[in-house]
Image (cartoon, one colour):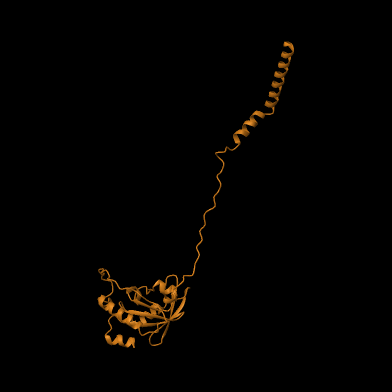
Length: 227
């Protein structure tokens, strides 16, 4: 019994050694270790990509009260405020170029009075002239709400019609809400100055009637403009 067991154990050991030598000859231990080293671990697994959250904006129609719809067209007028006096340099414009606060306010109030005598169905914008409007760059910015509500949505040519019926083509910039090319010629032709109040009455989609109230004008000038 002991001899048979010994021979069995000896045969098994020999068989194991032979298999081990074959595996070493084929480099199987090295290959199995390489596979274990290259296999990704659970902790290093890539995280799932999350989709970015997209928000959408929609334009909706704002309901207006019937009482508001029946009211006259609003007047877009700038509010006069006290200006900060900045010392002028020697190369600046002469003293008579600048309108006093009282003269500016007087011209603006006369422009407001004109509104009561004009057709209420046409929107109106009132601008008080400052130096940049009538000299230098000759750029006239208009109230944004007036432009977006009543003027063209894209850049183009508009027509300004003065009180004599003369027409002046003006380049209108929709994004900047103002007049650019052509405004210089209109300003010079009508001798606009600092403090003058200019009334723009939109009578057509691309045309405005213009009324001018001088800051240094007398009461007679105001009556002639409002008549």
